[in-house]
Image (cartoon, rainbow over all chains, first blue to last red; front, side):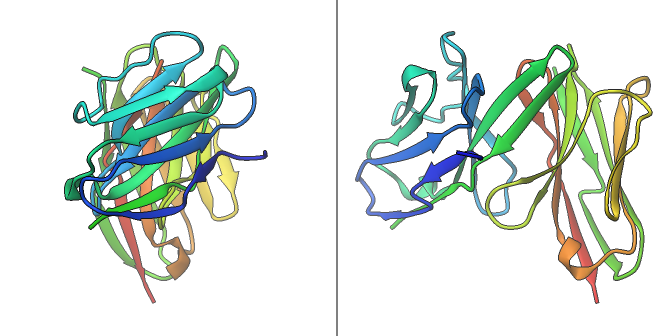
Length: 116
Length: 108
C-alpha cells in the first residue's frame, strides 16, 4: 500500500484479555517502531525492529508486552492480560533510508486501545 | 544522553499571527530532523531537514536547520484555527528521538 496501515483503528477490550495490534509498514522500509501515547502525554518508545537484527525491546513496559515482525514486514504487538493503564493510542512508524544522508519516517493512523 | 528539546511547551496566539516553534538537539550521529503535526491520533509528516541553512516551505509553513548551533525552527505565518495542534520534532540517528512537543492554540 501507499502508507503505513494499522489495524484495528479502535479496540475496546475487557481488563485481563489479550489483544493483538497489527502494523503493515511501507513496502521496502527496513525499520519499524512501535510507540504508544497516553492521553495528554508524549510519544513513548516501545520497540524497534531494524532489518534482520535483534529488536531493541528496551521500551516495553512489562513482560505482558511482546512484538514480532514476520518476514521483515508485518509487525504484531501483543499485550497479554491487559490493564486499564494500557489504554492509549499505539502508533507504528515505518522508516526508510534512501541514502546515507536522508531518513524518512511515516506513521500509521494508530490503534486506540481502551481497556475497560 | 541524546535529547531533543522543544520550546515553548505551549503557545496561544490569535488568528493571523506568525509563530516560531523551536527545536534544539544534542544527538550523536545526527542524520535528519523531522517535524510533525499531531491533531488526533497519528502525527502527520511536515518536513525532513538534513542540510544546514536550506529552508523548506509548504504553504504557510517553513522550516530551517542549523547544524552548527544544533537547532531547527518551524515558522507558521498567517495562522488559522486549523493550525491548532501539537507540533513534534524528532531527530534520527539510528533511532527516533522525540521532543515533548509544542501545543499550539490559535484563537479566532
